[in-house]
Image 1 (cartoon, rainbow, N blue to C red):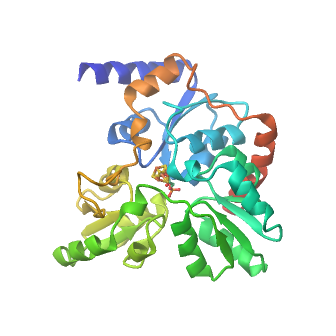
Image 2: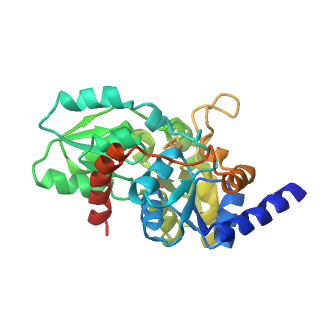
Image 3: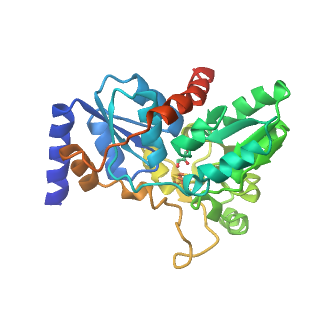
Length: 320
Ligand code: 13P
Ligand code: SF4
């Protein structure tokens, strides 16, 4: 539409004018990912978004994703201006892990190493020994387990259960979940597999264990995209946010990608395989952020920033 063309052109102009780069997550809407590609920005999983934001030359980052991704970018690059299309884009894992309660939980188990998922506030990261994303969580927990460490894990209970099962590590779990992945249903998936017996099943480990058990490949967004290219199947049933189809289809145009079923139906499921907060990253919001940054800029208090930087750097160094 004329409006979309206007926003796209203005965004391109403002990105150059402000020496800014768009950094987007695979769950953002197709038009946002296309714009990111057209403007020479970067699309990836949460681990590589963090690394790119830190290493790129741009003075300003526009992070199209959810708030923890903007905060991570700011913690790693305090000298950069970090803008977000909207500061309202949060995450159910972040909301379900308030710092006071989480910190009290950690205080009860002082002999445990605190490992938190990147999908948390800066304050929760500041309380942690390690930050992990789904790309690297398994390796880091395995490494800690080999050193005989007992672990506090938060906040995603499904990812935590998957890692505990794979590594055998001693993990105390915070009981949080992602509202998108928690809705995938093993029963409905079994029915769907009968209809598509030749399809491979790709599952993000934020999904319930019963769904993960049915997977041909389990992994972070980037790992699932790689599996969709590497596996010989022509058809895939994908249990993660449907935003990922943009990149999967682009990299394998002849393959067929189907959404894994949720337990509800269109009328009753809360998120229907698309994160409501990721969906807030529209063209107008990006334009507004670039045009007048006030109300879009991420700030992290210095004391929190310095503390949160330590476990974040541990993760980036470990995965370098
Ligand atoms: P990845 O780290 O696999 O990209 O997933 C993070 C996530 O769930 C963002 O919502
Ligand atoms: Fe959080 Fe789930 Fe949305 Fe990712 S998809 S941002 S984990 S609510």
